[in-house]
Length: 342
Picture (cartoon, rainbow, N blue to C red):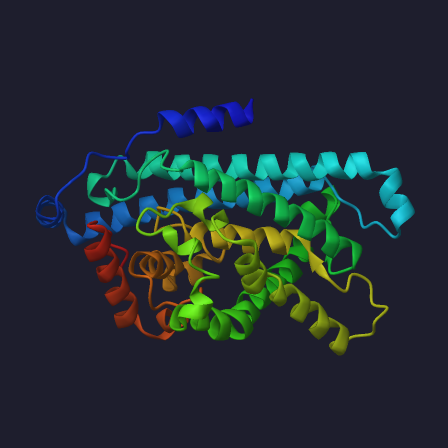
């Protein structure tokens, strides 16, 4: 039923708004500035931000809870795996299908919200604009990711939470720390050297070329439009480094040395939001950080220009409001929109 709905929406999809010329878009933005006072623009900006947060927090909680329902316990040996192979396979398939469906629904809600504000509806963002090749990579990445999660569970890198853990607020502090640690480790040890190399050296760019066939049209599920080797280079190393760090700083027999599945869901939610059509998307699931750092703005520009913004976290936005404002203005110019985002 879910996949029939997704396919139907994919085939029927229409543009979020009629194509608008650059002149008309600029005129529309100027007229809006004349009609709205700074206070009313602040209110409009806050309302859009608030709705976006509700959508994205709801999405991540749904993804977390369905990982509780379709729990994949660590398998201690090959015999146990063979005895439960059918159950594990069903969990993997169900988990992958539901995850893709939730992400698809998330982006549809953002399309619906932004379609009410024509000056925010970029003509490059097409509702239902996922091609067959996009769906091929979505299926491939979802499948590889589920298998990778299962293998990380077997080797003790990853552990699943139960229903009690879902409602245990004290556990969420540890989950957030794991999430932020993986973000920083990935930026410093993988994206900074390897992502930069793939953009500077033609012989390495071929590993990353497929992902950059997604340009100004980027939306959430395009995070899955990536070759397997590229996926591994950018995403596998950070969890392993985090677990190695845990082992070095603590006794090997400490309970739950590893990473919570919820931290992985937060990281997935971040990567989905990077490619979203909505610059108000929740990136760090902390209102203060999301206010100061506009990761979606930067990564959308990275896809549009195929240059700059190599790391996923825009650290410079934390201490430079001028740089943050320049990136928002650059986004509005490139995508012909009129986002305020003070």
